[in-house]
Amino acid sequence: MSGLFLNNYYSIRKSTRTSIVLACAVLIILVLTKEPIALRAALFLPFLLIPVQAFEVLKTDALSGWNTFEVTLPVTRRQIVASKYAIFICFVAICVLLIGTVFFLTHMFYYSVIDATFFNFGLRGFGIVCCLAASTFPLTFKLGTEKSDSIMMMSIGFTFGLFFGLLLILSMVLTDSPHFDEVFSMIFGGVAVVCLLVSYIVSVFIYDRKEF
Image 1 (cartoon, rainbow, N blue to C red):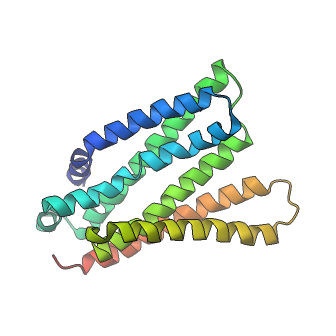
Image 2: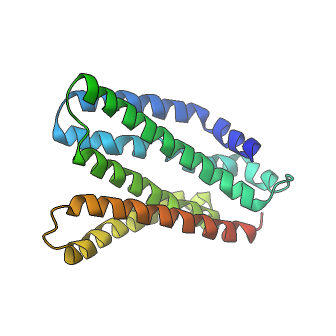
Image 3: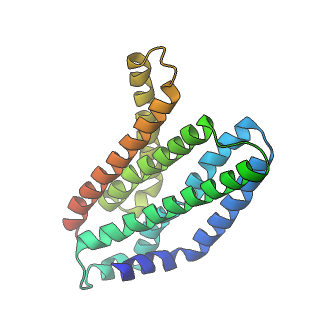
């Protein structure tokens, strides 16, 4: 399992390092502006730059032919799928650590930035990227990387459909709630995690039956 994880990382290490450096630089610049819109963008940006690199692993595997060789190794297909999800989760953890560090240091030494907006938009950024992964992984395993553009469009549609659908439902259920934003953010984040877990089960099912 660790070997599969490392192989996934090494196949995209250059683009991953670039995305992390870029996300860190832009994050710091946005936070230092003190603009509310910039702060909200700073909470989304790392999630849109770093974890999506995990999707490139699938493309790299297909282009290099590694995916056809990988299934002949003394590992189960479940472990192969798990390694793809593991590197995604690792990238999400890097985003959380990066955002938390920058905002904490800014809050301690520059000006107050850790408030309700920090938690709300942080959870929403986390939820959006998890929903993207929840649809991108199984669709790619099923349809193949050659349809990556269509898969990304479907994933974006699923993500924002879930986001606004949940927003609409909660707005009808929690009318006039003073903590609506916090409740919505927490529920959306939780639903996104559940979608990712279900996605893993579906991906294993698809990959077990996939022919190479």
